[in-house]
Image (tube, rainbow, N blue to C red; front, side):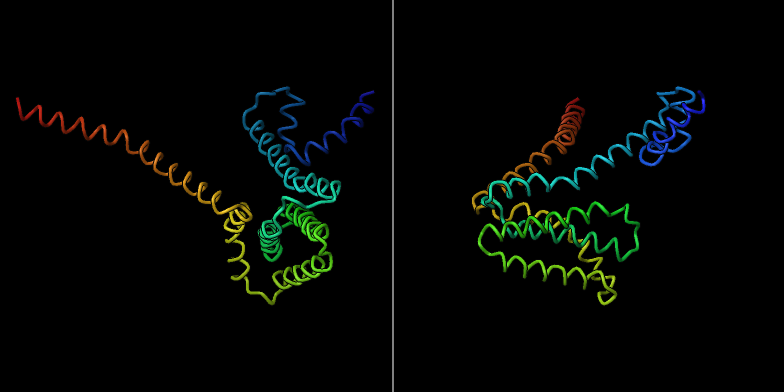
Length: 220
């Protein structure tokens, strides 16, 4: 009976040890029933969040692809924005590949770029430019091959990787009207001013109190 129970628990144990916790934490939870062991809770929480983020990155483009495919229309999508996002993820994947990182560290980027590439092709297809979309994807594949090959200096790949944030930001604002962009910039500037006011408010109050105390001492 014990052997049967152990055999039943083996797949579950292997699953937990592979994705969520080291063996010492498994022992703490399931042998000593120490469910409030803080270091192990932190490990499990960290690994769980990592898996959720990974799953989110992998499946995030799928609803959009399905919506475009189901409706037969790409209205509302900006092709430039899609390609900028594709370029940002691609440079990250190329950088990890050239640095010989394990596939587990960047595999989600590979899945994401494939999905976004499909989305870019669908956008062109439903705009009646299927051939142009295929040409663009072929050009993109050639670019990826060149970036990931030894022909491209590591410094160049590193620079492309550092531009990821700018590419993502550009992809988010591309396609918006000039008025919308101006309002967004104005909101950001107002936020900076508000942050400065809050940061220096106490300092200004302290200086005013000191000046008042000095004047009071002089009067005395």
